[in-house]
Image (cartoon, rainbow, N blue to C red; front, side, top):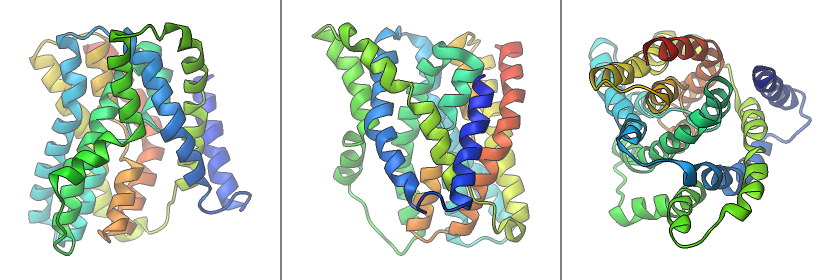
Length: 300
């Protein structure tokens, strides 16, 4: 049933955009509910029950490892193919930052259940921090000499609604009992999956892929296969097992982040490549996620 929900919501969003049932920017309003209501509710529902031990190190470190790996990968790729600074930055942003919430949460819940979703929340918070810090710095460095201050980066992080929910979910239980509100948080969190998938369907684009076939191939190969393999090797080397390790590898296999493509577009960093790699990545991840679910269950 979870997979049927995924397909129905994605197709519904895509069809409504194609048939002009909704406005072109309808996803902005939907994303507002997701960012300000659903994602904080998910954190407040799942985070208080997490046992904080060494098992959570890998989920928190995974986004940084994937981003650093993407930087190295793209730099090596640029020596083989002629790329301008904007194209390099667009690739780093999109293949270095995974769609750990809008696509990651529904797929994680479908394959690994609510226990996996609890770990995925931590992966997503660190992914956002990577976007706000290293992602922003990458975009600025590749654009027309923009500068950014530490205060601006900190402001972007602490004012992000899901991050506020994440911190509240950690701090509030230390002082007050929020368990009576848990049924409310649970019901609000249930809106995340269908709305996130519907929003993704509204934003999917498949134009212009023929102009960037090689870069799309190599970029998606890294994001959908090399990145999760990197985290799997780390987990096996450190002898990590269980749900935290499985979810970390699975979340590392998620497609490129939509917000990363938006950031690339804002700074005019080959927006066509960025948007195409995100759209194709989302479609392909519906297949590759099955492969990685099998691998993590077998290896971890």
